[in-house]
Image (cartoon, one colour):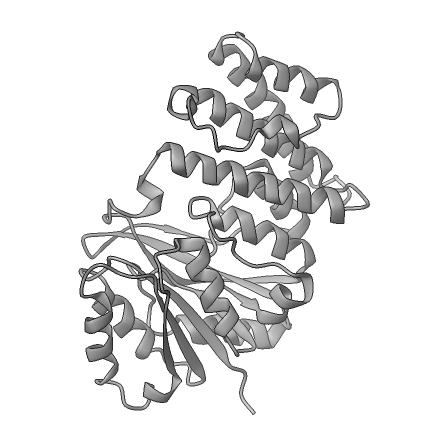
Length: 329
C-alpha cells in the first residue's frame, strides 16, 4: 500500500496564476496524491478556471476536493480548513500563485520513506515573470540549531511551503494554522511542528515561489498584517514556554520576542491607534539582564539605531555560539 500525500491549496484572487499552479500539481510524477483546494470566497474566476483544468486530468479527478468557505476568512483559516479535510499520511502546503517542478513530490516522499522523517525540506527557487531569479538550498545542520535560528526570527526561512509534514504531527500535538493569523502564518505553525519532529532534507528544488504577485500577503505591510505578526509570535512564545520544559530554546525565544518589539518600534506610527492589537508585554517576560535592557530600549526613547546595533550584536554572538562545531546540543 502506497503512502498518500495531501496537497493543500488556499484559493483567493489568483485567476492569473491558478492554471500554472494546478497544472504543475496534477502532472506530478508521484502517483498517490489527494488535492484539497479551499475557495475562500474568491472574487474572480479562479474556481471556475480550476474546475475546467480538473477535467483535463481524468485520472486525478477522484482525488480532488474543493471546499468553499461561506465567508471570506483569510489565509490562516483556509489552511486550517484544508488540513482538516486532508487524509494523507503526509501533507504539503502550496500557495495558489506558486507551482511545483513535476518531480517535487517524488523527491520529498522518497526522502520521507527513506529516513522516516516527520518533516522533509527541499530547495526552492524564486521566480519572476516565469524565470528563475534565485535558488535556495534547505538548511544543512541539526534540527536544534535550525529551530533556535528560526525562533530568533529573520535568520533562516520559516516558510510553510516547500516541505512535507507527517499529518499526525498536527493532530497529535493540537497544532494547526490559526484563523486571523494571515501574515506570519508560517511562523505561527512551523516552529511548533519542528519542536516535535525528526527532520530530513533534499537539495532538489521542489518549489517555485513567485515574487511578482504584488497582491500577496508577503508584499503587504499594514497595521492588520503587523497585528497578525504579533499574534503569531505570541502563540509561538506561549507554546514554547509551556512545552520546552528543559528550556533548551529559551534564549532563542527571548531573541525572537525582542525582534517583535523591534518591529513594533520600527512601525510604531503604523500601529498607533489600533486598539485591537495585542500588547506584547502582557505576555512576554524578559529573562536575564541583557534581554531586560534590550526590551527597555525598544520601549523607551532610546534611539532606534543604538538599540538595533546592540540587539544585532547580541543576536550575532548567540547565533555564532550555537553554530560553533564544539557547542553541545
